[in-house]
Amino acid sequence: MFYKTRKIHYQNYTLITPEDNIVFDLLKKAVAQQFLKNNPAPSADISEWKGQDIVLFQEDLQKQTNATISEKSFYSYFKNSTDKLPRIDILNILSYYCGYAHWSDFKTKHSSSYIKKKKVLFPRWFWVFSTGFGVLIILYFLIPVQHTFNFCFIDQDRNQPITRVPIDIIILNDKESPFYTKSDSLGCFLWKTTDDYIHFIAQSPYHKTDTIYRIASSEDQERLKIKTDDYALMLHYYANGKVEDWKNRRKELSRMIANDVTILQVLPYGLGIEIYSKEDFINTLTTPTQSLKNIEIIESRKLNGQIVKLKFRIKS
Image (cartoon, rainbow, N blue to C red; front, side):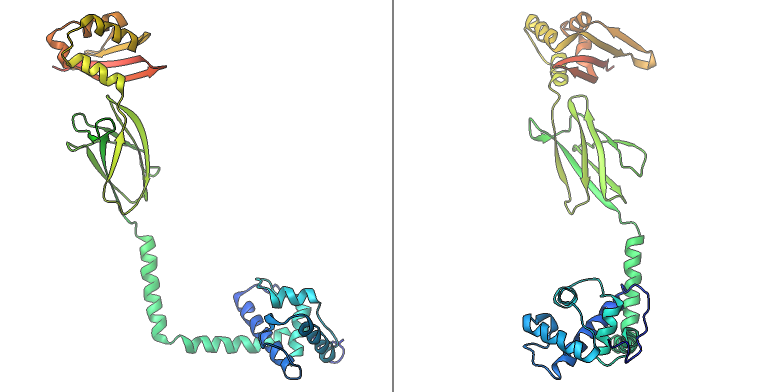
């Protein structure tokens, strides 16, 4: 073994730094150049060597160093790309083959050369420019970017903006407490936030509640279609429309409203709440009085296709 003729220093360390990988690439090129001095090869690129070329290299390595490496090691570190370095004994053998005392010797001499070349390639003005550019990048990520979300609500049945009744909006972004707002006279609302998303609930007395989640995009405005709450809307029509067939109206209302329904009227001026039975409420809706036109549904809930809870008030 070549260890008897020339002293090789073993060192126990992990070869994983980017610089080590670069120096190992230089070592592979040095190995190829050393082999080509006295041996023919189809290519100066060691990764392109095959069969007989590898055997000749192993024989020349044995002759020069009294040691060799396995075919498996050759394929692992010369033929294939890898982010790992060979064992220290293999590195020492290859370095000695190229005329160096050991791997540390080869690494020390080629590392300093590599650093000098890097300094030449990157003059002072480059570092000034890159530093300033780096500061801009850091500031870009540190300074919060404000995103604007703009939505307009569309009635899915009529395909028209929802303007007759405002949509109640509850913003649910994690970093903020719930925020309550309403759509404007055009059926739209705008929200600005440093979050790159928006999470909110949209609801109204006559439309089905929907939960919306959107991430920031370049879209200026999004049209959101909201489903109509048919039951609440029908009650609204019954309370405010001109229906001549009162008997038929009572049958339809009885079918829509559950027998165990909870019906509450919110009284004006903070006087409290009045409870209605199903029969009393139907009587109210089927009696053509002036107050019937002013009934406003505040809340409705349904189960199995029937209304089980209803809250309303009479606007003065």
